[in-house]
Length: 613
Image (cartoon, rainbow, N blue to C red; front, top):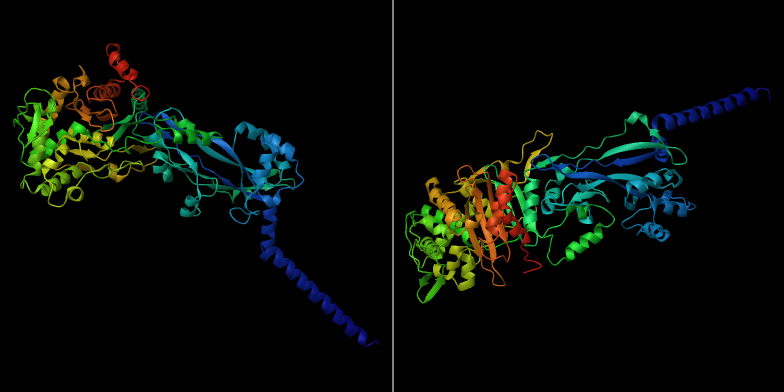
């Protein structure tokens, strides 16, 4: 027995030592090498909060702030951490919601769109004043936290179609931009907000917050090493002149139509008016936004429809200067050509009317008086250059020039809603009349800007800019510069586009447009101190009163502005579109309308073609 005791003691001692070593190794493993337990501990004491960036601000060309940010708060919930014994009555009182709403907000399709282990948005767009009192007690409600977001505010009740609006991301966006957006995020939905979303949105940050056992925030942990700051979006300065924009919208009150003004030397858009319009503040993110959106959607005047780039119109007689340029370049028209007109243009037993005016002894006079006969014949001469039966070739030649003028396709303005208009081609008329059947005389109305030809108001304004520049243009655009950013605006807005017309042919056209304003069809556009070159148009409307059209540029020899105005159901081009364009030109160049010209302004302001057609 005595001999076995030391042996037994030795065995027990070794077992104890081995067990101690194993325990030490296990503790070392847990504390030094295995981070899972520390991560689980952090998960219970650290809260990961996403930091949302401020959206980029938007300014006008003079530095006036157009769009800024307003803070709002979303309340998020993590279902698995919500205390079932919480004081829901106090919670609802603090958040100013009904108990029934509390129940409905927690009633989710678990396992489908929502997970009880993943935070979701419980209540959106909480007013900062309501949130201030709620925040003091939020630690009493485990499972609930807050997210600070920024929504848009507007300094001016203008330019709604240009600026656009933001909306909450939908499922398609979440699927298309996996990881870039999460549920509850906001995204540009229309206008500049959508076009420059990548620049404006900024990038999110992350903050880790240490909480005690009651859920109260203590401090940032690990000296902020885990945090990353949110980066604000890029501020953008537009080419838009908000004073001119507001004035244009004022002139269009009670009218349907649009106006676009461009700086011809750069392609910068100075104003882009679409009427009827709406106050952009109506669609800022707030509790009543859904109702406001529905009302605008149901409005029969369709205020969401941007007539400056989405409506396609027959241009009427403002097409004549372009036709003249093409005819001269093709060698079928000389500037001094006289084309007889006795009040109509005749072909076989048909006659096409023209208004009474002095004889068009040359092109400039033909333009000044907008002689239909002059341009019916000019159109035929282009179309029949290779023979009466080869009008299809003539139309292909004509359309080749028109495409170089930016027609028939989108110009490429930095707005997502631009449409391209319509340029009828030979295939279109083959389908309409039959292949090798139709002749130039079938489509004479194209010669005076009628028929199937359709342009946007933006395209019309760009035509005026081309003539102002005597043969070139820059793609119209709204971006002026990136604020506090060395980047240049996109290349496509700094590239000069030449039209295939010799410079010498622009002078008779410019002279004709100048004469039109001085003593022709556009005398209502005359200004004693500004030499305006313009052309009226009356776009025929088979469904009601004709549309009033005018495009122009000024001053004649140093153009600072090119403009197109289209007023639906307003009659002759000289009656409303021309004086409206001149008022906008005067407002831009002189900054004011003097007292002795207020009568013109008052006449326009009193005109109402919506409630008093």
